Picture 1 (cartoon, one colour):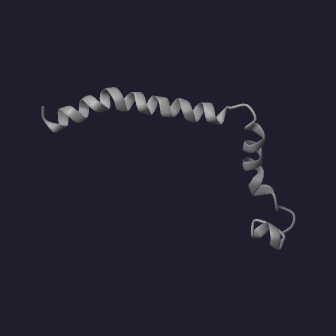
Picture 2: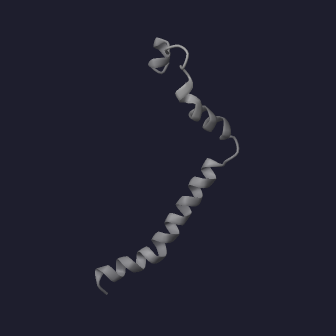
Picture 3: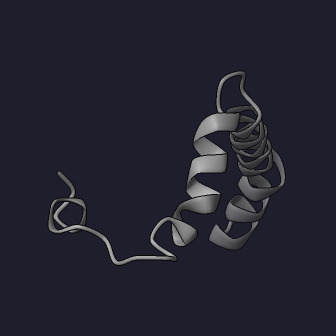
Length: 62
């Protein structure tokens, strides 16, 4: 069996299964219970210091 045929067979079967499972894992991770607060916090983080600059401690991550 030549290399192309072997790689094509792998991509059609096991790689497709692995990528599908990876996709489902990412979706389940994003919609898991308790993640809404973290996602909202990340979405609003760009507006955190809209009215005043960040303090020195906040810029350093303390």
